[in-house]
Length: 132
Image 1 (spheres, rainbow, N blue to C red):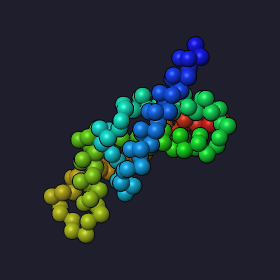
Image 2 (cartoon, rainbow, N blue to C red):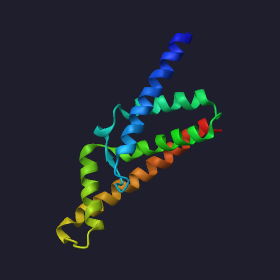
Image 3 (cartoon, rainbow, N blue to C red):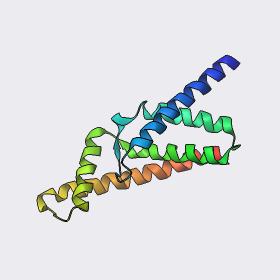
Image 4 (cartoon, rainbow, N blue to C red):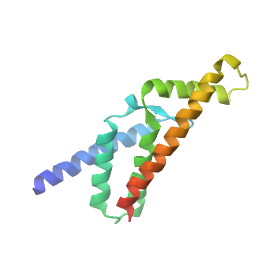
């Protein structure tokens, strides 16, 4: 049992480290990112973060907070098609040359961003159980 637990912890650390590397490489100005950028699927990363938070049991607040923040950021990884559409809409909104034909992308980007914000709030509620 101990060997399996240690193996699970090692795997969780590797998963979270790979995810952390992706986070470090991202453009911080982007609202969303394509899920294809992730080294593992979202549920695998969530499970790894849960395990590490459970194992830490609040002992290292800085690491726990970093893990929780990374967990919440998972909501920003959306399907690639929507991420491309959101990026197009974001670029339009940040441009000084607004093309009326492109405004539909801005509307779609706003819808996607609102959904991502709600998903982030839900993930924050989920991870808070591990921080108490």
